[in-house]
Image (cartoon, rainbow, N blue to C red):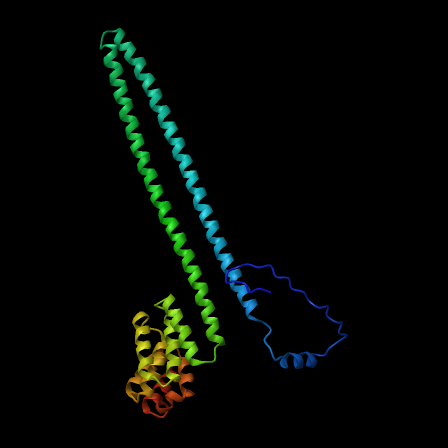
Length: 293
């Protein structure tokens, strides 16, 4: 079968073999079969299918939103058209009333018919110009709002597509065993979203495995400049300082991480990078402060 391009839909028929009837199996037999599985119960195709389904749901939501905005706009334009028609009719009736009054005044000798006619036309033109200007401003405002909403819809669609791609990259990192390959994937995530603090800190973690503490420290400082209270970034900073034998700075960063999340205390107890800090008085003081809180 020919390969299917990314994003291209293809009808796939899945056939299942008839399952032979199993009379009865004890719970121990079932558990033994599950534990003896050598392959996962899922495959990349199912993962790709789920991701496509999520993207289709989001796209459908955006289409529904666009249709709703269009319907609201059409109704607003219909209301504006009715209001314009009503205003025109009002001006016309006003003109008839003035014409009748002018005719009466001509009969009593107040003004000539030409002067009355010119005055009525002038008043009618002024009223119509005012109404047209008012509704032109309203239509211009509605047009600007439609453009803004259209831009927002496009930006949301781009963000959904970017999020789907980043999500697939995160799934790849969870399955990748090579440190260098994971770092490359984190770089792809950061190219799509430069302020992704999680990608920075996880990249710092892998960089520490390569024994590059200064590189990891730079990544953590960049992450903290975006999110100063990110506990994982402080913890990775402590690991980098400890690897560089700057124990005082490492202890200070570890203390900040534990204050933001107590779970990092237990992680520090078993982290070989922070083993040099466990027997210090500062670490004991940190443990005492946790027991008192």
